[in-house]
Each structure stands twice: as structure tokens, then as C-alpha cells.
Image (cartoon, rainbow, N blue to C red; front, top):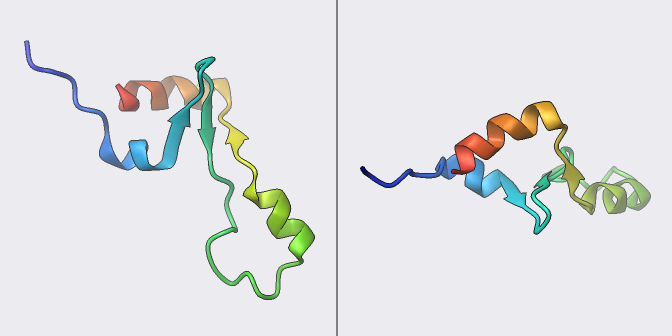
Length: 63
């Protein structure tokens, strides 16, 4: 049987922690940062955990 390939787009966007949680980047941290308060950009730097409903789909894509 052939090996399963992970979805290359998903593997760039999500990572799995040691305990199996799926982490994602927060939105609004990509561009147009000059007018956003530094308090907000610091808060957006932290990774967020995916909700369980979405995590099931992403785990399938990551292989």
C-alpha cells in the first residue's frame, strides 16, 4: 500500500503539539501592522488552539 501524503498547505499552517493539540497562527498579524497598537500585535503573536470540531478535519489532512 502507498504511503499517505500530508496536505502540504495544511502542514504549513498548522502544527501538532506533543500532547496532540493542533495549533494555528492568529489572523491580522500579516501586514498593515503600522496602525495597529503594539498591544494588539503582541496578543496576536501567540498561537491559538483549534476547536475540536476543526481539529478532527486537520488531523486527517496532516496524516
